Length: 398
Image (cartoon, rainbow, N blue to C red; front, top):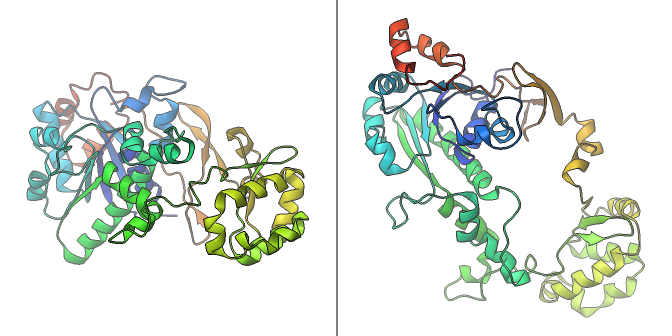
């Protein structure tokens, strides 16, 4: 099944997580993504366990459905090869600092002058034009700067980091949406687009969707911070044999919850009778909820709450996910045989088109694996290809 982005050629000069995840999404959707790396390769190639050099676990997670080409852009033949690729590309994306990409000669003005129909995407830590332009940014830093770590301080008195690269991954989703939107604009206008996506501004806006709260008004109606989410008692609730997460939300949900829990007198408590009143007494409400949940097993609560149509789910460990009955039933974990790394298991994407999951079209590539193949497609001679790849001494199979 060809993906919805089949026929789109993407030149991916990004590294680490944000850019590679954004382009992997495009590759999952069918685009021909050419991952262009320096001779040293993407740093994630050595992050985590692996079965061979340059093919570590983190790299494998963000770089399927791509081809790898190694070009040392400090060398003229490699730059010439990239310019030839740009002539026929639909999308050019990089996560290089604006000053450095300009020094290399591949800033947006130069690339759009060469190919006036290309979508040029700069993926930055901070938006250009401000005092932080060009400043390096990584997930931990942006979790702090964007206010995400500070939410824990609001609630618990001490800032914490979410144990996930949530800033990088969230910004990657924004970047992939922006890339596709920019390509649609190109289709409509026939002209290229310069699109920027920055982590800091992206995560600030993402964080403030709900947490701007009463400060969205001028003057503010209250301080920032969605009170329900900042309740110290908003947490997984302990059962007799584990933990569950639940969210009675509407009046009907709460009436049903108090009834099935055997605490029907709570339904008449004026502090909890309406949504605004519950919001004003949220810590107390969630504290009472936790006391009730502790009286039965996880399995009992799953059955009772599901029958009452109240959202509920048990707390899974990473190990538990492999045995989740829903994920097993839909075949979420997909077996895959990598040509050099052997047997793998790949989680499915969230997408289905016409009731079919997206196919794995290409394995995560070895460093420089497709160099000769890609440059041959450009009509380059063997001598030109060898010249362009001469400095890639660390590349495999080029």
